[in-house]
Image (cartoon, rainbow, N blue to C red; front, side, top):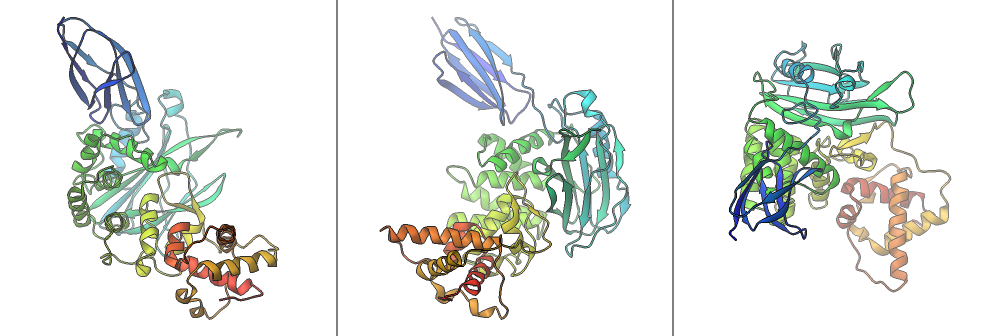
Amino acid sequence: MSRSEVSLTSPIPSARIDLIDHSGRVLATGAGSLQARVDPGLYTAQVSVGTSTEQQVIIVKDDSPVHEVLAIEVEAVTPVRSTTTNHEYHSYPAQQHSLDPQVQLGEGSRLVLFVRVPSADHSQAQQTIGSPAIDLLNRDFERVDIPAWDLGPGYSAISLDLDPDVYILRSQGTRGSVDQTVVTSEYWTTLAFVPVWPVPDVDPIGWEPSFDAMTMHMTRLGQGFDPYGEGSDAILAAEVALKGLRSGSFHLSRQAVDLLLDEKFSNPMLGIYGAHALLQEWNIRWGIAELVIRNLRKLTPGHPDVDALHVLLKDERGTKSMSRVQSFELPPMLYASYEAVIARNAHERQLIAEGSIAERAASQLRLDGAWARWDTLEDEPAAVTPVDPTLVDAAAQAVSQLIVTDELGVDQFTEPISLSSVSVDLGRYLTEMASEESRGEERDKIDVSELSRQVGLPVSKVRKSLRAISDASTTRPY
């Protein structure tokens, strides 16, 4: 009895392929293809793209080669080839909007917002969805006068030329008003593909965009979005990467990560996704990470998410030198980017501008996707009233007991700071820590930077919250 050659391939290069024996043991693994020599018997060929998995039983006979192409049905938000949700009546309009903007409000960059029904069912995918409740604001939160939405079968789209900058997308939905940033870079078109689904129990049917599941891409200005080109395989890998950024668990092979990184020159967003995945590998390839981020900074100078990757790289390596980036006035687009900036802010106080949206949004984030989205900031959320004075005093005492208060800088605030819901939550956290210490679990005092890291808030936000606790306390211990 002699071994036979098994060759397995997938039409999706980023797909993971496993050859599994009857006991469930994985004999070989590949990305896009797999070759192995095995004994005759029954085996399972498994192909996976993200969380989508298909299995097929294969029979291997004595000295008889096996060649199989493994099919898998994959859904994607972006209308791209090799997916069951790609339809010409979506991909072609998206391409046209990327090439021919409806209106010119600036110059140097382009933004395409494409809201669509990403369904494999043609009858649903062509439903009329109407104009979504979306506003575009500039960095000063002034409304941009966008054109009427182009309405087609199962999609709504707008495209406009803009000055390169950071803008705010404001969406109105069943859960209220939510903001997030969208960045346009000089010489590039930014495309945001937003899935839309029916709102349950609404008659007639209402449609609501799901920005938590949005995908974003970039193409060189004037070249247009190509759903069938070579880069489409990397776009599909990006869908998997975004799911990993949402869940914190990547289902990407090293080959798929490299595919994202290789496409960064034609689509820098793929490089950004790939760099995040690269920095979450078990053994980080530091040299490649440095090169990728350096190239991304050349391709898209000043892009907040690229600057955040520079910050994240320094933090992962434990580098103490200051980051060579501008202070963040607004959050980056990706939650992972924003999280990295907040973490590094514990050591670099100037990284987040005090009093900015980047400081204030951290306490009102929606933790429901890969993107940094926050409840629209009209005013700081007030504390639930009334707050028991004894709880405030206990929180103030906990601050005095646990925090190195000499460097809080609370005296710099000339006006009293009212107690917010953030202050109350922070006070409860510190009170619980003090309670553990009173039970014999001794701990050293921590500084405000370490506290900022523990609670995931900018240092300036923590300092203001601690000052509010002091102002509301009857004891004023610090």
